[in-house]
Image 1 (spheres, rainbow, N blue to C red):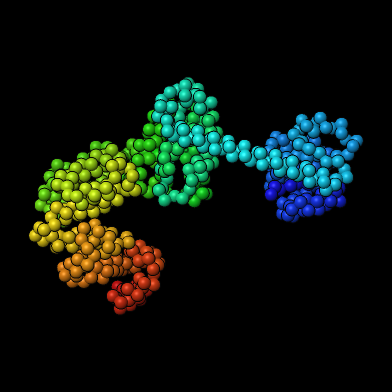
Image 2: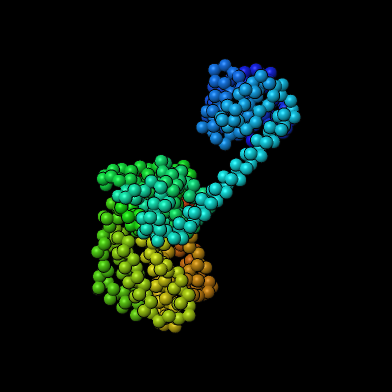
Length: 513
């Protein structure tokens, strides 16, 4: 129900109205009271009410002056005047200040009931209208998303949706890619973006575009000015957005930012290119053009490395293939190459892999690779997927070849030693290698001399011991870092293999040093 504010300098009148409101079903928490206009204004500004019932004559700030102020500050609040017969002369003035009804003294229950029903109906109409406006607004945002390229190319269309646009004004684009696992509606994300755009109004100097459930664009009209002024304005927008996203606890996002540009479409395009560099800078939430310009755009895989890669593929030598791939991954990590360079490298490596003759199963494996590089979370993820894909395709092309079982186990060992901290299962590895779980389990034990889970635990414990000696992390954190989901299980496995608990291990090693 609505919140109601009763304003009168006579306490007994306030109490009488409150009793009648409670008879109508309003709880004490939904009723506020004030002894004069100034106190009422203070209450409204601190915690706004939906309905204000005020005496017309009070010392200081009277009822009409209070309603005049409320009309400006709280236009949707329903304002009701309490008056006597002798005060009817004020009726015209009351209408001017937005009073919707009046109650005659002494106030009876029927009058209160009549006025409250009318105010509640008005509020309900306002809610329906506001919801209708919000739906129309959201529909317009989606409409812009469907046709934004043609719209942003046309200055007349830009002027039709950004009312403050003048020739020579600059634009800034903020291109958001929201994590696929974010459980928020597009409307809620657009609300967060708008809240972070303090000082910018939708369709005046701010245009929000929803391209897909995970891609959003905020186009800001900066106004004419030197680039240095535009940069300060863009930095201010970025800080506001960062604060609002933090307040909303929305962490899984990346935002590409453009420079200030005279062309709206170019501002959006540059912001999109910056956003795609998330795969190069996975730790950054906001990526601006200055960061992008520092990336190496000229990286090319060496011809010798490509030839060795092709040779390894033809020879079905996964170890050689993996070694060259890892060497390349290390190079680009140190170089911080541009998105374009990484995309070029990625498609080169894909083309090498695809030279293996497709089989029916191999065609299915192709689906594990994205067409667009920016859809990956990082360069490391790209090379991990390329390794897995290479593993499956080499094995598929060499099902009956000599040493196939040994080759497969070698690949799996390397995979475990690289990604020990992830949730690795025998079922997952068997699926990746197109063999049954029982076949892989037997093959692993025959070649390695221990079962899969024991080997995985040994690899994880080896890294855990190194972390324990660094004395930087708590035992629970180390357990999680090396792939154990439960600290107690980690401690049991550790004691079974080392003969002591993790803490005892640290103390023992400290004494021997």
